[in-house]
Image (cartoon, rainbow, N blue to C red; front, side):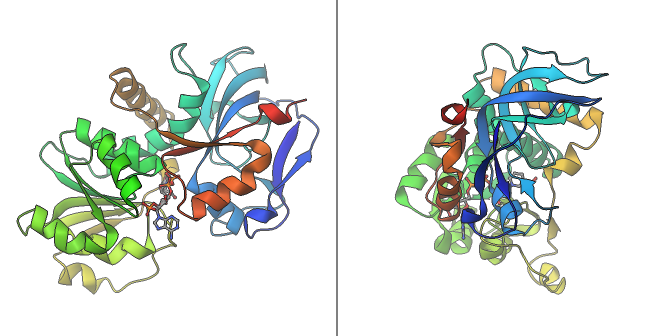
Length: 326
Ligand code: NDP
């Protein structure tokens, strides 16, 4: 099999495609042959060292494919099953992978590998953000920075289905169009955000900001909130939010701030079943429509990371391993 590995953390060029022996699954594990690999911003944090991990390491936390073998005790999937997964440990940028079978979810016939890999981790993220973290109610107004991104598009779609008004921000007119097509009621440039958000909300501010951009939008997201509004900082695309004086939350209106992560909201089997069940319901209802902005060969993972970090992508990014399969 072939896999992208990093020996040390750093820029995209640290990722190298290498030949490795195909592992066999142990108890509780499964061997999956990947058809499509989902690229997520978190992959760049693992690669850069922002999120520390043991080295050398694989990269990537999401893929769709077919089960080739299962270890002892695995009963919910079997060889031949089409599956999708996100997993806490990196290693999905590869033609094959052995992982804890608990992450694997069987794919229905009408859900393609491409769509599954384009949205699985992102849709589960959106589920916990909207339903369990923000607890969005019909009539709420929500600010979504990077609304044309992989998570941003699905987040907008889910928020609209929950009855929210969505104000998105994007960096270019082309991205603004994509955010509007996803359902944003209003799309702003980042620089206009706090003032234009006040204007759009009659001076009140939004109920909630769900912000994956991080450092660069932290202040403007707080300044866009209503009194006692909620800021959910769920990512670091522009860099992590560093320590700040808690007093600013009082000064800006007794605000709430949280920094959640998917794996804490999908930590128990019950949470996992409920969260993934809600995602399948939204898929069946036609609420979620993945926007696949770009595909790269697995061998071109470096180019995929460069594009993501240069803000040159829209929607979801995929790696396709077929061309490097033996
Ligand atoms: P995106 O497709 O959204 O890509 C990131 C986008 O962020 C860019 O396209 C860009 O949009 C915007 N951006 C703003 N400033 C910068 C910058 N300085 N550098 C790069 N991008 C910037 O990525 P994902 O959908 O994969 O992830 C979105 C966010 O969600 C990430 O922060 C990720 O870490 C987070 N996330 C968090 C999870 C969690 O459990 N907490 C789970 C999944 C994702 P524009 O050009 O319009 O500004």
